[in-house]
Amino acid sequence: MNERVVEILIYIMSEIRRNRSVSKKLDFLSENLIKKGYSESEITSAFTWLLDRLNSETEELIERRGAALKNSRRHLHEIERSVISVEAYGYIIQLRELGIVNDVDVEQILERALMLGTGRVRVEDVKGIVGSMLFSPEGAAAGGYFLVDDNTMIH
Image (cartoon, rainbow, N blue to C red; front, side, top):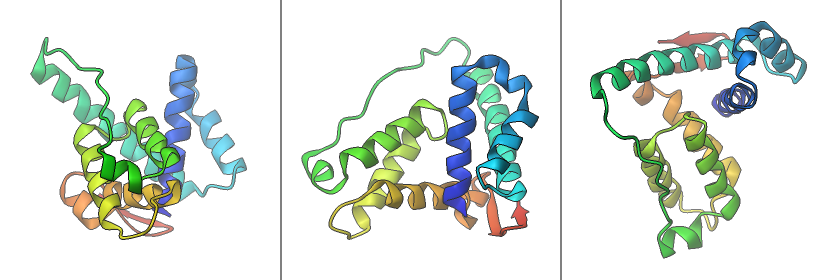
């Protein structure tokens, strides 16, 4: 389920970036997501996470007043390139560009991907990692959410 909430976050952020006025039509986004087969619980979890993230980032930006934000890209080490597929790394970049994860999160995703022990890390593997980071008991302790089942969310 966590992976599906991350998919919803990507959809919402992509729509907002593509069409800023869409942020005024959240009901329209919700209806589209329901038509795509997502549950109301998943959609609510995504919107709640997004709103909390926006609030915390606004507070953080106010505290940093005038600090320059960098638009840098992290390059994969040779070992990371041998394990993480191009598509999986592209997915991580997409999450970063949409603001769903930050630079520290990217490092954690890459570290967890390397520790999977699979031959090659694919997009589905990264979706699982990101879902567990954003919606796990550890994530809840850091201000995230812990999803118990399809109908229950603990903040």
